[in-house]
Length: 154
Image (cartoon, rainbow, N blue to C red; front, top):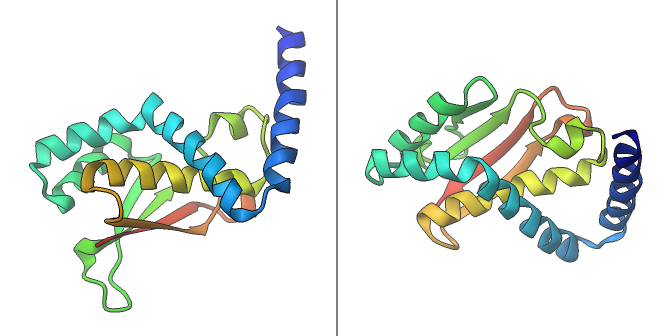
């Protein structure tokens, strides 16, 4: 088992170096695939069920997701810059949920693009491509206390 962990440490260090070397468009494309795989492995089912139960009501869906994932993931209504509260939410992670980070395989804050892509993939799957934007506001790997992503629905 120790040999496998050592191998994975070296292997992910190579991947991490690769991600660090990529320019933004290529990094986003790479992380898009990572975020999709992560979403499909766990959270996508939670969001799909919440969407079905809420019968397409965005606020109700978010409340369902919030109930299921709290305290790890907290949805907070945002009411600033004239955006109607039901069209903009912050997602706050109280701790890093990335198994690669938690197992110390990856340490770069650039990995947080995977979480942004994860949320984008999930919400676009529910609402359609181009109907959602996700902005990374702060991340634990960047030294912040929480990870916060702003989701805006069009």
